[in-house]
Length: 359
Image (cartoon, helix red, strand yellow):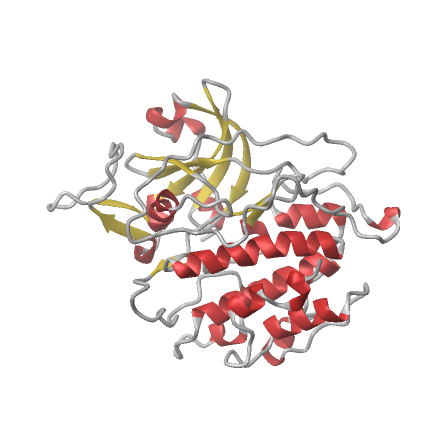
């Protein structure tokens, strides 16, 4: 079934509780279970609204909780008083972290969940010179109960006195732009790379450090994103980064070892590690995240995927890069994209790699 089956048949099919409070500005993303809109409330504040089709959600993407305590209109309830919510909404509600998109509220009706979130970033579906920066209207984050889920950022919040480095690479200006994009307006890293072609090493380092630090923090509190890719990272003109789309994320009790992954792979194949394609063999989810980070770093620095063909990833045959990168940057990519997951660099070692720490 096409992913477009998850798009509502019409605006009129959406619940009045949602449409009476938010006006849809434009569609900014679509996936297997829902569509994301840029919306504005009656006060003129901008948000992102993910409309999730209930009949497209996998059982693993739902969670029963008795600790919701917010508006439960439209939410299914169990006999013991618990409510059923998307795991993504549960995770975002518990987090109060500068590297992840902020939770605002969750609404529901018979057919859809409506996950209202902070809107972050600028539209990259244009040349850098034709659109002035549009600062996001960030809603106030609720200070939520983080019992059992302490978040202590490790470098995500960069000092405001630091000026982000120039994000356009040093290649000739004619190579920094491509033909007009045939995609919807988006503030994700995919569109940013489409526009700037590739980032300079200082800018790539600035972005990548934020991503790795956030993934490290999530792991410390028992959360694994499980679908890291350029389309699930939004950034603004100051290169401040936030992770989005926790629809494939998993949770675990940090008093116990992190669980191995098994079963059908639900992420994005072009960012998947070789071991993820053997569902009969459990694999290390953290190592798989590191592989995806290596693909992201290559895209940041070169504008292209590290493997010319899908089968090359199985053997770790990196494509010949068409642009020069420093030896340390190449070492960082290579250590992330090591085929043997036991020899692949660990997540916290990656955060301390010399290239990331370089000034």
